[in-house]
Structures are given as C-alpha cells and as structure tokens.
Length: 315
Image 1 (cartoon, one colour):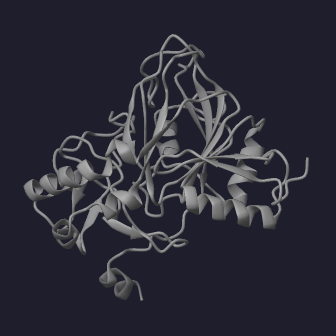
Image 2: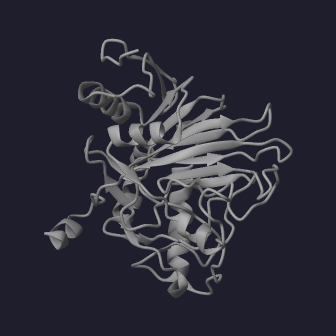
C-alpha cells in the first residue's frame, strides 16, 4: 500500500483534542507530501491515533523521522547507570532512540514496581521536559496490552488550559520560568542512583518559560512539565512558598478533566502526541498481566518562549 494524501481519513474524538487517522500504513515509507499533511493534522488535533499498525523499532523510528527526527530519552542514562544493559534488560532497548514502556521485571514477568514505572499509575506530565531541548512529540506503539487491565492514557489540551486562566493570573505569570525536576520518573519515584533532593538547589533540571509558543500554530500553551511533592520543580523568580502556591494554582487549571481525552489501548495502536501543547497521564496497570509498548521521541526544537525578554536575550 502506497501512502497518499487522498487516502487519509481523519475522525476527531469529539473531545478537546485527539483524532483517529485511517488510510495510512506507517510501515510504508511516508513521502514528503503525506508527511506535510500529517503534520498539519497533528497541529490541528494535538494527539493522533493510528490503529492497527505493524511496526518494528526501525519502522517506528522512520515515522519519528517523518515528523521531525529522533531523540534519545533522558531516562535511558539513568537506567543504564543503574546497571540495565541495552538489549538485555526488558526496560532498555538495544536501539538508543527506542524506550521500552513495560511492567516486566528482569526475568520477563509482569510486576507492580520496577526501576522504571512498572505497573504504577503515571501522574500528569510532559515527556522529557527535564532536558534542555525537550522532544516536540512522542510516538507510542502497543506491543502487549492486558485484557481489561488498566493502563488507559489520557491527554489534555494546554492551549485551552492557558486560555482559561483569569486575566490577573496571566499577568502574574508573565516572565516567569520553572526549573524542571529531573530526579523523579513519571510515577513520582526517584530515579535509580539519584540522591533525593533536600532543597531547590538539589534540582538540577533546566529552566523553561511557564508559557511557550507553538512554532506551527503561534498559540500560547502552559508548559509546566511535572509536579511532585516539595522539593521539586519550582518557579525560578519566586521564593519556595510563593512558588508552591502558584504552581498548585496553575496545575488546577492544567488538569481540568473536560479538557482531556482518554485512550483505551489495543495491540497495534500507535499514538502520536505533541509535547509542546499537551500533557498526559496513565491509570495503574494490572500487574499480573504483561504490558509492553515501544516509544520513540520526535526530535525537539528550541523552546519558543512567550516572554519578550527571553526573545531579546536570545537575540
């Protein structure tokens, strides 16, 4: 099957984001015209579902290339430092740009807790916000999915979250930046080999603007990353108490359920989401059943800050 623009069919979810895309075989090369059209659809719907795909890891990376390139996940280094060998551990792929999202232990058995996220629920977050240049998107391909075993993934619309902020709150956050916590994983547990932070000075992640501008749509979106118990991510320009109060207020707007869409996985599903204007979360997984998905990150570009001062500084 040759992919063509004419064959693409889009079925919006009816929620604040999300659409299913039919008529595209991701295992077949994606030509420039089809790639441009898919990028346009992605910018419109933020999260795309491609059902029934049969891809190996190189095929998944080829899809990442079509959307902008590939990027190695920041979590890989933590797992390797903890002794997980690429290709030997069920959680570290032999291919650097592939991440294995799995609840399997070192013997290939499903468990509740691993060095990574295991079967635990995942908090609302944006992938790899804790690196200097975060990925523009994430691709996740379902390999093994439990039967009625949880692991549903929800996404929310951070354009709309920003637009719902009261004018006074928008004014308060103007020019502010968040230092993003790189010590914890998406289940909120400390990464292997990490020394738990005792104060904000122990948080070594990069600082990003609280609001970023999407380079394709030119729309503003909240960009909060992750939120854990103190000490964790913090507002650079505020003291600890004021930072915590402001972030709690912003996260209340960022995680409103009417701005979300939830996906119940089937083997062969590929989801592509935009990390520049969405967050996502996952329900807990039945730890008696295996769940394995492979992820590729779409290479990021420098964050476009909403703050004019940042633009002047960069220039």
